[in-house]
Length: 195
Image (tube, rainbow, N blue to C red; front, top):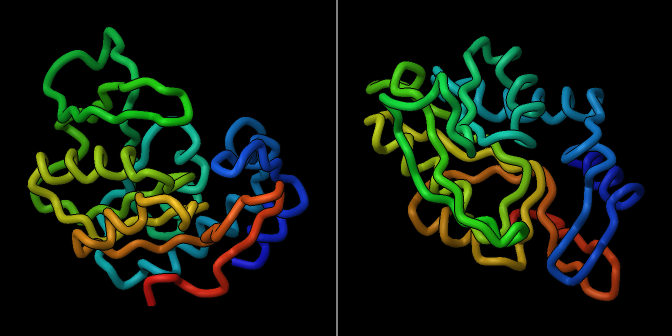
């Protein structure tokens, strides 16, 4: 997605060969015009997939999921990273390790909002080592629902997450797939590296 790649080049900050900071438009401050374009792109790619729910994880996956959900006309469910008084039982849970934050969290989704027979599109902001997506896939499996595919805003194609998910036979659509962050420069794969 050219618009997204341009935004990454213009506003993204390469902090190391593994870390790209995009907090000016995705992770802290949100560019609603870009999120709408991203949501439209995911909706177009999955319009004929029979999606009944979009599943994401708080918080950076919520904005692109909302725009895709509006177009597809389906609810968005987000996995919570922290327990709350109102979300304490009747849950699907999975453990997710964040390499960026160097912590492991239980993520949870109420069994009321993801049910047997749902066809789910998972959307997340980044795919690097794949832990967040694996946790969401685990929750979909616990619900006896079907994963139609995984929509990723930015994939770090030089890390293992994309391969791990694709090797499970799951469709992954990444709108920007980064080949390298070496020497402080973002280099993209021109096409899907698995094609």
